[in-house]
Image (cartoon, rainbow, N blue to C red; front, side, top):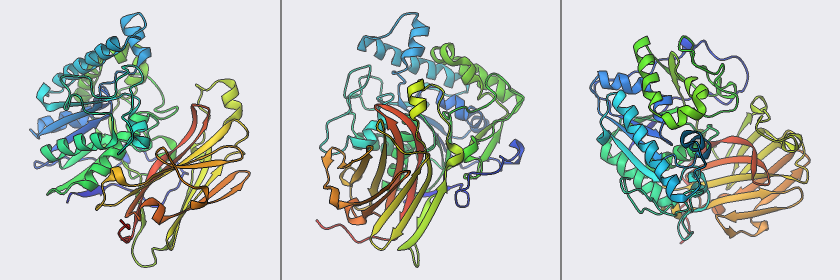
Length: 461
C-alpha cells in the first residue's frame, strides 16, 4: 500500500500574516525520486511546476505529466484566439487538440518528450459534476461544449472512456501504478476551479484504493483563488505568498527558481498561446522567484476517545464577495464563516455558520461522502443535502433519502446536520465540503476536507 505523506499544519487558524517568502522550507528532490505532475488543464503544469520540472530534468529523474482534460471549455480564450466564436462541438474539440499541441510544445521547452505526457480527456469544467453524481448506475456526464459523454480524442489515454467517476479513477490508478511515483505534484483542494478540486479528490481516492509498493509524497499547488496572487503581472523579482485564508492553515514548502529557470518558465508558458492571448497578465503572475506547495491537514478522529471529538474552522477571513457577480448577486451574497465537525458515537454532526440568513434566493449545499477500502468507491454513499430558505432535500447522487434519516437544526445564520455513519456506509474516511449558491451561480465555496475515522464495522450486505 502506498503511504501518503502530507506536509500539514496544526489545527486550522485563519489569522496572522504569511511568512516571508524565503522562510518556507524547501522542496528537495533526491536521486531516487520519480516525479509525477497532475494537471487539470494544459498550462497548469507550467504555472505550478515548471521550476520543479526543470530541477528534475537536471537531476535526470523520471518525469511524467498527466492532464485530466484537454482544456476544451474555455470559450473566451477560444474567441480571442480564433477571433470568432467557437460554438460547434467539433470546433470545440479542435480547440482541445490545439491545447494539447501547446502542452507538447511547452513540455519540449522544459526538456520533456511527448511520450512523457498523458492526456486523459475528461470534460473540461465538468469533472467536479462527475465527482458529485455520476457513479455506478448513473449515466455519464455530458460535456458542456463538445456535447459528448465519452472521451472523444483518438490520442487520449483511453479513447471512448465514459464520463463516469469510476472511469476517472480507473485511468488515474493505471497511470500512477504504471509510473510508480515517489512525489506527486497536483492541484489544491482549496482551489476555486472545479476541475482543480476534482483532480485532487479523485487522486486521493485512487491512492487509497491502490495496493502497490513504495511511498508517495503529495505536493498540492494552487492556481485559482479570488484576488490572488497579487500583484498581477510579470514580476519575476517577486515571490508568491499563499492566499490569506491558507497562510496559517497549511505548512507550505517552496521551490526557489533561479533567473534561468524563471526565464525558461516564461518561454514555456508562452507556448500556451491560446490561453496567453486571453489571460496573459494573470498567467504571468506565476512567473516568480518561487513555486509553493502544501496541503490542508487531515482531520484525525482516530485512536482512544475518538468517538467523541470535535474540530472547528473559523473561515471568516476567507469571506470575500467575488467581483464578477452582478449587483443582485452581490446584494444577496451569503458566505460560510465557520465549519464545525463533531464525531459522537455513531454519528457525524456538521455545523455551518453563515455570514447572514440565506433569504429567499440563496441556498446552501453540504456534501458528505464516505470511503471504505473494502467497498468500491462507486458503491459508497455520496450524500448531498441542499437547503433552501425554508426546506431541504437529501440525496445520494440522484436517489432521494427520507428527511428523517438525518437530523437538522436551523437557526437564522446556522445549520446543524447530524448524519448517522450508517447512512454514509460506515466509512473509514469522510470527504466533505459545502457551498452557497444563488440559482446556478456559486457564491461561496469552502475547501474539501478529509476526516479519518477509527475502524468502522463492515456495512451490512
